[in-house]
Length: 177
Length: 144
Image (cartoon, rainbow over all chains, first blue to last red; front, side):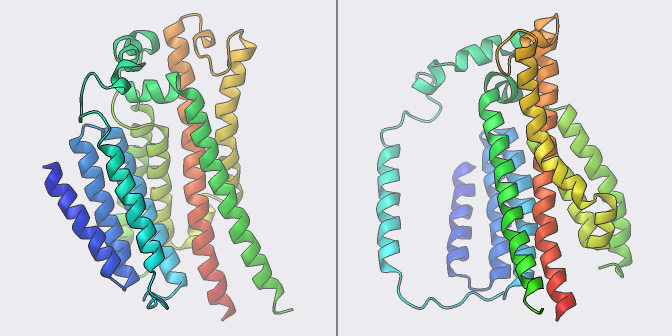
């Protein structure tokens, strides 16, 4: 099931690289995100799958289309052959794949990740927080500091975009005078 | 897209359910999948759909720019203030156990307000980014 989805994702990625029409690329991004969301649901990570579907396939697609409206919809041919970036990407990818060889097997109950604090969250979560959904309990209660940090990141990204877009708009208004 | 009758009618029906679903995801997040982040994105998507179908000025009348900009900061502030409330009531920062005489109820109360903070900031940021991109296209149109 998951291998079929991953194969489809690889096909979508290849199509994104080859395709020069940016409208098609945006739609392929949406397809990719929905496939990713399905993979996450297949892995029983429903909360993350929901986020991927709503942010990756929903809001991102709308924002990309909004950007596409402001630019041209054909990607330019590259001016030179990007061999150095390709070599860099391949080297990084090779290192990451090499790194995964050292990871514990998938869903291994003896992995360090599952022996550290996870048993406490699973066994005591409902009693301590009264929240049946462990994801919510971990996110909002046990790992409240991290979620505060995440919310601050979203806030910072938002005001960053506001600052950038505002300035461009004002400069454009000043030019005709 | 104001002239497309089918789109207008369907959108009007959909938006109510989208907002309802966002509220469901928000307040049911303790039991089922979802939470503040997902609910914020879904509610922002409902307003974005409204803006796409009925035009940006109509969306600005429903959710004005100043409301959205206030939401961007208010959510983080609410989250941080829940932490301060923990200190004031004699616990640590972001300690929910002291928010209510019953520790479990204190946890539920803390989680509720923290999720509300996440919801407000996320929906505000998503909507603001869309407003900025959509508004920029309109400015150029009116100039040319």
